[in-house]
Length: 247
Image (cartoon, rainbow, N blue to C red; front, side, top):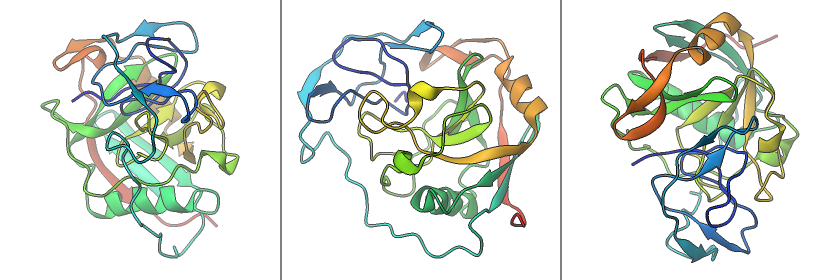
């Protein structure tokens, strides 16, 4: 199954990003649970389109994932540091557990379980973002090992260049393992966004900007099951490790 950017209503193109996609208002009719969506990057690049199906946005609908009862444990620091090691080099991020406690704790439990090792950055849009953490090197979806979490995009953190944030579906509370790194400022993804929620930022780049820029510059194309934006040279996440905390 394919995981991608945002949507508004029906086949309207919009600026945003996700595992499957976000939408306008959760009280409106929206489109969810489909493998491809028609989206548009902030610079107007159009991508992924397929016939869309409209369903009522009933939060009790089986189409809507329900966040688990996950309550993050207290961390040793409000600013943990993680390093994403790839075959292109490493990127180090300072996470913000003060403003995104649930998101940071969820990300770190995947890190501690070594979930990300061997996954790839499967989606690269050089004037938008790079996305990974959900597919292996055979382009097979790696099922999340935990239920989705609550959206924390209201925390004031912005989708600025170098920030790390959670991908999700059209349900605002559906983030699991997939994340993305903003390679430009993407204010359209900030709270409240196009769906009254936006995308949760939970950290910022400390080191490895040249690696981020090298990844965003990789030529992309179609590789099954994806129709576009797949790096033609694989970007493999070799590991994500928790480093010493920031002072």
